[in-house]
Image (tube, rainbow, N blue to C red; front, side):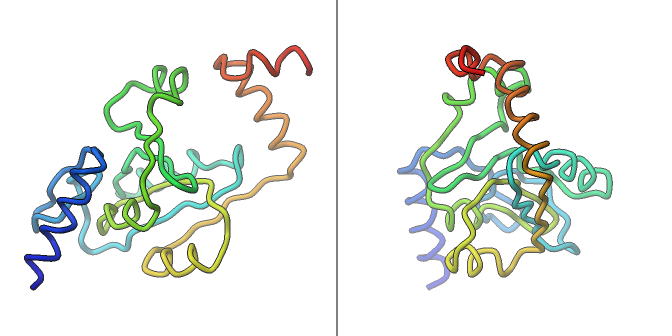
Length: 162
């Protein structure tokens, strides 16, 4: 029965065209590296509040970055691209994929980041994770967001109105 469930899950992932690795127990995952002695970690944050700073700290303590950024209804996949390309062509890296399926691809000792709407469904999906929430004064976050758009060319149409 377990084998059938795993086969159905792999078939569903294959149909979605999300590239996955197979972990040591043949479970599909975003990245194959893992630390079995550690929980899965979800950094849920407001934009520009230190999301990737916290991610960097988790890497320092030995967790593995899945290199995906979760959003409601999908994720942005940075696993196979250089940082500069990802910042410039973010729209090309977005994949539509159910959040429950994306979180199931995170293994023990790995972390994932995202800006997610808080609701009961998210609470249930995040229950098996160690969840970190980052926030920042909203004025500072907005100024940082405006600078981010201007620096990386993402907001060229918005720049005129600033």
